[in-house]
Length: 121
Image (cartoon, rainbow, N blue to C red; front, side):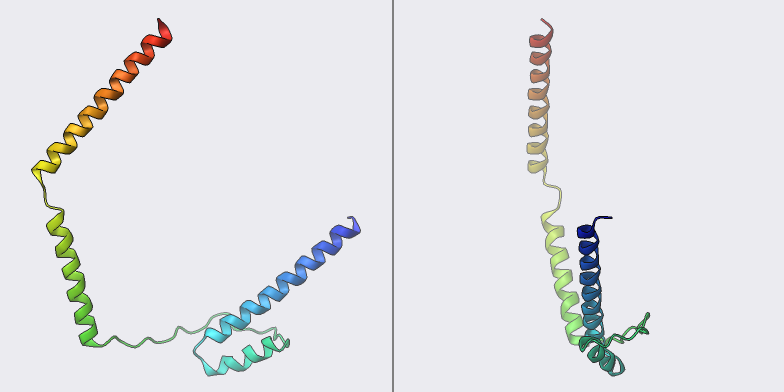
């Protein structure tokens, strides 16, 4: 192995190790447990412990306020009702769409016939 490639590989390994240490610091900083904050300080100061926690307990989430939940449900129902009203079958729009489709298919057929005529005759 050429020495410059070996140097580059060692440099990349050092960069990856530094990035992993930073990721561990960020992960530990975002955990809500006070017992893990001391380990985050050790990692950020360069004293990386080999026994990092592998599985963290999931934090408990607070229930939303009932009035906020009711307002969110009311807004969701309003949005659904709005879309339901606008998505009803409109005969004029259906007729217009069918005519556009028929016109597009007719033009495509004419273009196909002209292409076959110009290529083979």
